[in-house]
Image (tube, rainbow, N blue to C red; front, side, top):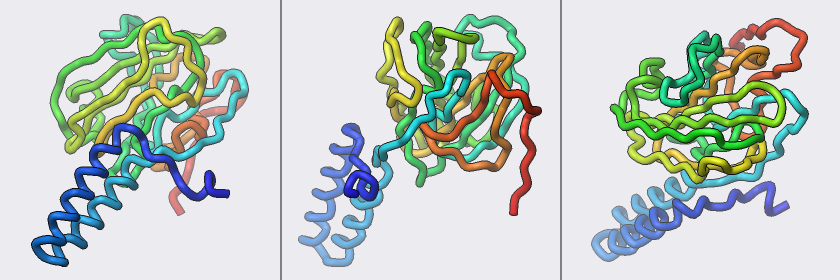
Length: 228
């Protein structure tokens, strides 16, 4: 019961929560209103760094969302050049993480980490498609035991200034496994090569480690949706 109602705090958030608590203590020494404002800040910081439990579907052929957020784009795009995957006809699914989303990122597929490539860049609004090429990012290529290699990218945003990736080349990862964190607003792109078929639509909310983004065994056309 407790596990389903309280989310653990990501280790990277501990220092930020402690700093906010110290600020709150000092605020109360100066004036009570300042202290209460700092308490609210500390609670928000703890909320931002939450790391909730997730139940990941594990059927072969599925690509699972690497992050909580909103689908902002679905369209053809080649994987990042730094991953050396060639000009394959992949479908890129862009997920925007606002300031209230869980920012712990997870592996969308199980397999071997074939490549990790960090690229310095700008800090444009992460909801824009041009952020995929212009912003600071960490690109990751995973080679599953079955099916084609999959690329996904952690992208810094307008406010985000820190990308954390706990993976290393040659490591074996499981689908849905925690693999990093992006602080304070960001974007994650996942490149779905054929025969993956997208199972989401623009505007849909995703749950990291749970929402199925694409299925390489699907026998249906890409989905359409309506806001209501």
